[in-house]
Image 1 (cartoon, rainbow, N blue to C red):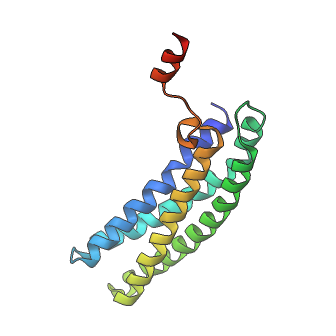
Image 2: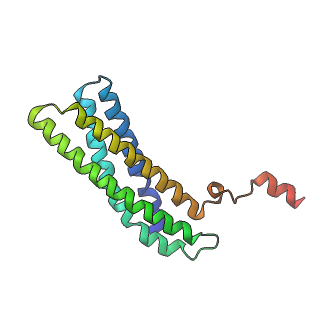
Image 3: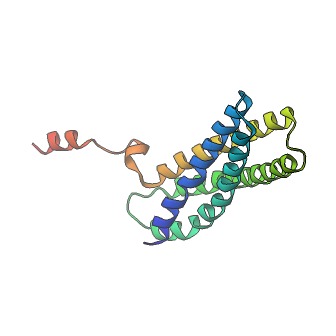
Length: 159
């Protein structure tokens, strides 16, 4: 397994954990127990933690794929830029989620306005991860970039 494989495996973890944490915290706002909020906060922290190795494996992955035929170097640059913004947002979200857990441990509750602000930041972070993933897909996945030709069309052209 090379750096590109590792990057592809790791970069999905913060995407899904952040989205799952967002769902759990939303459910906690809809009246589910504080346990749901705690699990959601831990999930957001995990997403932020996994964002770091996902980001750090990006550069070695770039070294592997940048000279491969069909790789769009401009897409790599765009992906890298949005990934750094997503990482910063996720790190902030992880720090705030950890603070929220600390506050819940100290007083067993957290202000509703704080949870709403946390939800907003989690939604932004989740969206940034989605855009980052989309931009990453533009690097070489022709089926996403729109340059791919369906197999059926290829067979028709060969006949």
